[in-house]
Image (cartoon, rainbow, N blue to C red; front, top):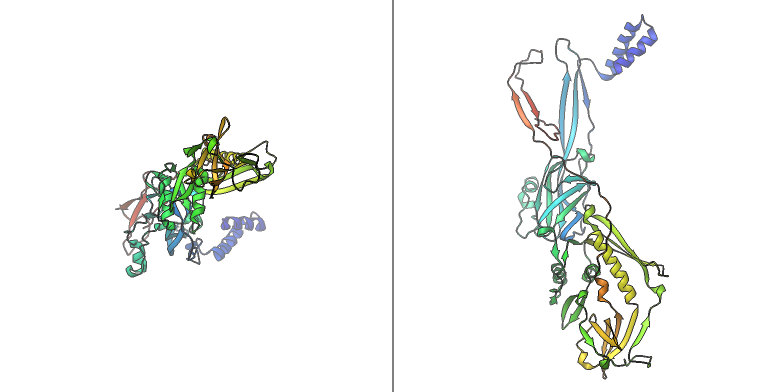
Length: 483
């Protein structure tokens, strides 16, 4: 284009008669700036630093149950690999002409990413910078390959890492689930390793029984005896993101799946709240608590003021309908005079309907528990403990209470309990997850190589053999090929 532009400028300066001379001047400047007509080389952008993003020691590695989307922690990398490609055009035929050589550089990387400190079953989709890199069928959107090591105690070291680092210098990472990418093309990601998130399928079928999660937490915490047989609900996904107190992990699950935990005879007992009352206490067995200040009756009922109760409860969760991105649902009490808003985040995979239901149940239980009862029971009820649900006979009516405190004395057992209603747990609310953009991977077509047996077509006398070949693909997405 420079030759054309400068020729026009020469015509403008020299007029119609001097256009020929002006054009010659323009072409002379063109050669001085861009090179002569015999050959010209155009070189594309090239990286100066082939190192990759760093990975720090001490980063926590998640423990995954069910199915969860999470970022990994890079544990090894070979750095970027540079490939140089030349393409020459022109220069043939009797007319000669300029020969243009275009040089382009492409980059790939081989690296390993840790996923879970617990053995997993498979890896589903993978996103790179938010775009789908690998679909559920295992197809990659760019060139390269991926291998999965599921974290078994018998897995072997990756052969590619051994070839680069040496067999004596490679860790097999037994007990750690990780993936290895080999020669992953980086052209789509600005020639850098993108931010990756993985759909980790930790258990066969993609879900796990709640009792298995609770048992694993107890085992990791060193609890010698526990009973989780009552927790039969299915969990779509849960993650322990790093070091945390086992009590916090159990409380996160209990708020969604409605169970409590008590200690009985040196063993932890996990029980669903849907079980209802553990014992029905007749009116004749209800005694006046020894520490009860009000002597007007056997049972002292107190009611918490509205201003101390939540007006709204919100839950943050992992929504599978939105490609395992964060969702949020809330429950609000329209007639409350309180301004208290409680919000909590749960690393749990649940539907928007389940999150809405859980938030409403938590709000209703908070308001139902505003009524506290103080009373005493005879010694025959000494086996009752905190967390037990008792049905108290109050005249002609019966009401359920959950024991919060018990204290055994000479005359009996003093109790403090909050009002509880099993019916609040039986609901199914509806909510909308919104929409998530659908993404799909167009698989790369396989290159087809064809050597050509044909005469020379360059129009030049050659003194050495010239090989002619062609490459292409029958269909699909094809990024070209090099030899």
